Image: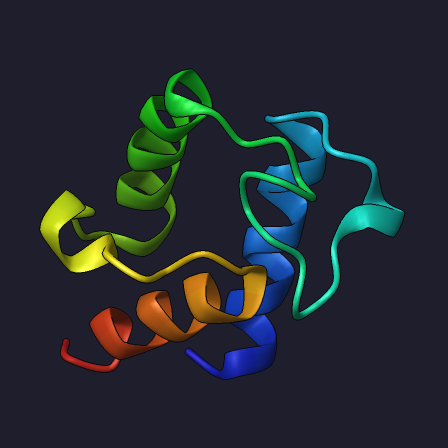
Length: 82
């Protein structure tokens, strides 16, 4: 899966499932501060990522993943492991 495909899928579920305004999503957007993702949203994200990308998010691996770009980097690193 290419980086572009990953970003498209992440953007899609952020807009469709979490109802985040598309114009708020940019590479340096902070997940909590700019996108408004809270702990309840994160539970949804765990389920969505597992269904969409086929791996489980591990909270300990998410340390420091605080922007949209870093979140896509994390997914790319896990999808690349397959």
